Amino acid sequence: MKTLYRTLMIIGLLLAALICYGYGFSSGTVIFVVLGMVLELGFWLGLFSNKLLPKS
Image 1 (cartoon, rainbow, N blue to C red):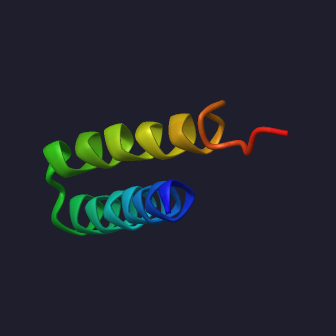
Image 2 (cartoon, rainbow, N blue to C red):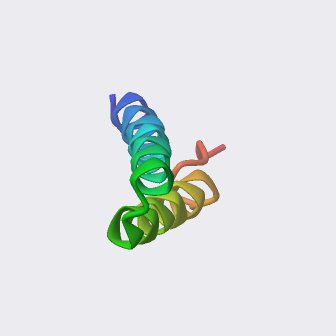
């Protein structure tokens, strides 16, 4: 269950980042581009986190 929750959280971060990038670039609002960067950073950190990898 934890793996499913983390996977959904990572996918949610990526989608939120893409939405913020899209809105920020189309409207010229810098705050949404910065928010997209922060969300993307959360995506990459969550993707390569040791906690996400299954233990053998």
